[in-house]
Amino acid sequence: MSYNFDEIISRRHTNSVNYEGWRPYIFRNDPNISFPIPDDKFIRLWIADMDFATPAVITNAIRERLDKKILGYTSQFDPDYLEVLKNWFQRRYNWTINTDHLVFAPGVVPALIRLVTLLTSPDENMLITTPSYTPFKMAGDLNNRKVFYSPLQNNAGYYSMNLADIEAQLADPTKNIRLFVLCNPHNPTGRVWTKEELMAIGQLCLSKNVWIISDEIHCDLLRKEQTHTPLATLFPSYEKVVTCTAPTKTFNLAGILHSHIFIPHQQIRESWQKRYWEMQNPLSIAATKAAYENGDHWLEALKLYLDDNLGLLQQMLQEDLPKAVYQVPEATYLAWVDVSAYSTDIEAVERLSTYFARKAGVLVEGGDMFVDNGKGHIRINVACPRAVLQEGVTRLIAAIGNER
Ligand SMILES: Cc1ncc(COP(=O)(O)O)c(C=O)c1O
Image 1: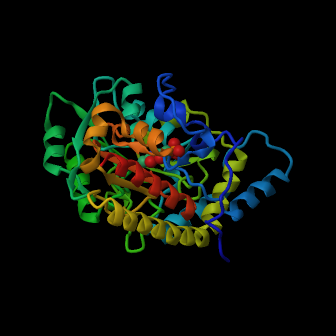
Image 2 (image 1 turned 45 degrees about the vertical axis):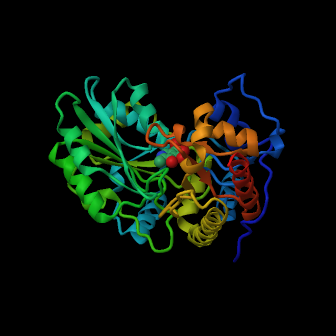
C-alpha cells in the first residue's frame, strides 16, 4: 500500500491551531503587528503537527466506533488495548511496559502540569535544559516552582547536555532542585540521546534522589539509523522516573487529546488517580488502539518521506544560505536552524518569527519561543507536502537574501 504525502489538504474551517490559531500563539494577538500578506497565502511551518492525512486505519477505526451509535461515559476496560500497547513498546523499543503503572492524560502537556504539582512541594524547584519546549517551563511557572536552566552545548548544530553544569546545579542547596525534565528525543534540537548520555543523566538524578520526567512523545519519529532508548529501561528499579508517551505526534492525532503516562511510584500514581477523573474519549481509545495495532506500515512510509524533506531542506540551505548551521535532526520532523550569520540586524529590531511572517509570509518559530539559548535560530516544521516545504524554504531564503 502506498500513501500520498504530497496531497495538499485544506485545513480551513477545522478549528486548526496550526491554520487559524497562529496569531494568538506566535504573536499574542499583538494589535501592532500586521502583515501585508492575506492569511490564506501564508505557509505554515510552525506548530508540531503535520499537514498529512491521519492514516486511514485510524480514521476507519473512529468511524467504526461511531457506528456503534452511543458515545456514553467511557474508560479503558478492553484488555486487548493493553496488549496492543505492550506489543508496540516491546517490538519497537524492547521495553516491557508495566501496564499497572499506566495512567491516562488528555495530553503530555496537561500531564506535565499535573506531575509538577504531585512530584514537588512548593519550596522545591526544577531543572530543564535549554533551548526547551516552552511548556516545560510553563509547567513550573503555573505551579509556582522555580525553573532553572542548564544550557545545552552547541557544537556546530549538534547538541549535548552539560553534565558538569547539571551536576553542580543539582548539588546546589540554595536551588533545591527536586525534578529534572528530560526531553528524549529532544525538541527543538532533534537529538536522540544515546544510552551513555541517558545513563549519565539518570545516574546524576538518582544519586541526588531527584525525580525525572522523561517526555518521550517524539520517540517514534526517528531517522533510519537511530534507535530510541526509553530512559525507564535503563533504570528499571528507580521509581522516580515518570515516562510520558503518546500516539499523537506519531500519527498526527494531536486533536484526540490522549496520552499514556507511566508512573512506577505507587503513592504518586494513587494521588494522580484520586485527583483526576479516569474517563476517556471513546474515539481516542479506538484511534489509539488502531494506531498501535495497524499503524506501523504508514509510520515507516512517513519516516522515509520526512527523511527526504529534511534532506531537501539541507540541500537548499547549503546552496542558498551556506552560512546557516543545520544538522539533520536525529528524530522529529522539526529542523533547528541557526541563521545567526544573517539575522543579527533583524533580531536587533524584531523577532525572527515576525520578520519571516512579514517578509516571507512563512510561519516559523523563532528561538525566543524556546525559553532560552535559542537566539539566532528558527524551528522549521518539515511535516508537510514537499511542494509546500520547497515554496516555504524558498521564501525564507529570499527574505534573508533581501537583507544580505
Ligand atoms: C516535547 C513535547 N512534549 C509534548 C508535546 C505536546 O504534547 P501533547 O499534545 O500530548 O500535550 C510536544 C508538542 O510539540 C512536544 O514537542
